[in-house]
Image 1: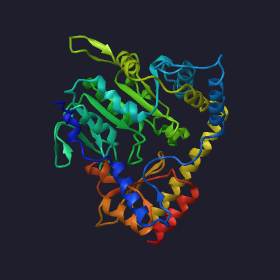
Image 2: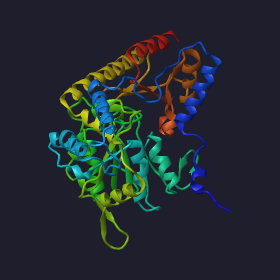
Image 3: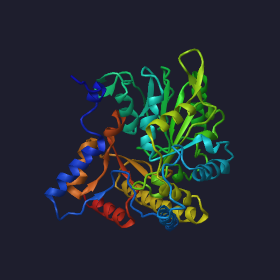
Image 4: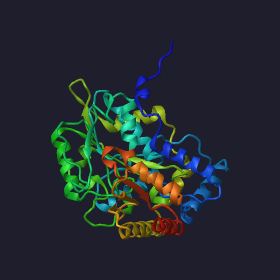
Length: 407
């Protein structure tokens, strides 16, 4: 008889955002005339900017012409987009990332979930707590996390990120092979200074670890001391893989485009006494399991780097920043403790005393028709908090604030 991968059976029954969607659906069915405003799942609401839309239309037209039609593209991504990324996101900051170190994909979530395939089944993994669930669940599926005990995996190394430590994770006492870091952070909206990130890069260099660095929200950084890329730290190209996305930067949540940077200098042990480039292994994996991001989408992503595209997208990001500022100020005026929301589109709110995360979620949903994300869904250290997003429209954000003040 065929047997399933039993590691999947160790996972909790539902993904966090599936649970939220189910509860919201039930509420809507019971209250069909009530407008529900979501400050929960981090999906954008602004449409694609004109430059991106024009590029998309032009690429679609090309696909209808025999002389310009494109079939299978390169699994690594088209050169025109890889060069644009290397020039704007890295060379402009004085960073030596080559175009062939960049791999285009259909989403950072996919790459973050898939990249763990390159490492041995017994690799030790460290994650912050609270944490974006994909890092944890993908390694659980691979069998690295051990067993779930008291709400945590017994082989996973948890690095608390809390008010008490200033939301800066402390170096682990047990050496991990893989370290997942996300900054600006999802879910807390907090950041690492250059000195704090250097501490982690130096640790990885010293201990021969690999850092999987999720910088999907880099475009929201405004403080000068906050690094936009982990490669701003000396030596990071030897220990770090960087994941970025066009989703929250340019509104590609429905279009799907991202990229992963795997520097040529990054090598790991091959189990035979030598070493191997992670870049070559990731290339082999992508060529086997992935057919590449669509040509029309990559042309749209290329337009993000045009002068017109950058100006248009900056206006959208400013709008989301303004939403975050209004939400933060409103929560503070209500006497709630607030973190994040400055260099990130997420606001981490301490719930009223005596309540827990899901309790506050239910309170907002049933009393004000508002959706947030319970902090405990991101890990034990998230209990007592909820995450709000700034991705709503300005009018919905203002209405959400009005409803919360009325509670």
